[in-house]
Length: 319
Image 1 (cartoon, helix red, strand yellow):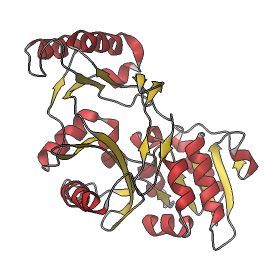
Image 2 (image 1 turned 90 degrees about the horizontal axis):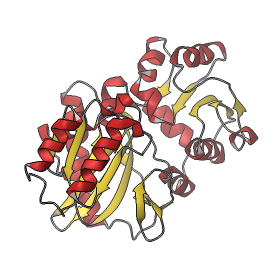
Image 3 (image 1 turned 60 degrees about the vertical axis):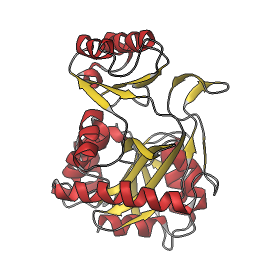
């Protein structure tokens, strides 16, 4: 089997490693654009992840049997739609389903429509509107925490957990001032700050059926003792202490199943890897975010636990 992996990070290296590790058949691996580590087990292809047309043409010309997409950006711009239009097998959600990650405002409204438990929120179309909402006291007083999110993709750096209203206003101004891509801040999402512990629950889905992966937890703050801003890729664990069976069953019933059903009802059945980021509060689990692909760094912790053939799983999703 000839497999193309799209991406260049630790997540994609873990995917390449896992695809080779338990494969029942010979695997010839390509990675676009890859990295030095991936080059030890796959042939690097000098195509950028967002160059969807070039990637599809390479898959056609190189007789690629299956493409696996690592990062969110190519999913958001429609790589899966392009590949499927050309009759190429690929694992991942189409552009409409990718909005669950590409737009935090869309995701929050989706949760609201389908009664999926999440934090109270408001969506602002400008920094001035967001600041005005904060000043009404809807999210608490001057010293209460509030979460500020850029609507679009921001490489894990578009979420600020502000400890006070003044800090939240600074965060809004920083986002609007260019701290992330301008496209990411067309809208700003304000959320109540939830207390509890975080859980990442990932699953494989073909649009109808799904199978859970082991729960994981990542570490978001850059500083010692959970200080500093949120960012991606600081580290992850997965073991039986992260999530017990009772709570997992509750998440499946009230979050996973309504999410997949909601996607079907809205005309974009979710196929690929769905990542649900949750806060387990005193009142139960609440969804913080959706990702529409493997997480980084959760992938590096989860995939070493996989005993079955990942190529078979991906082929089943694609078919």
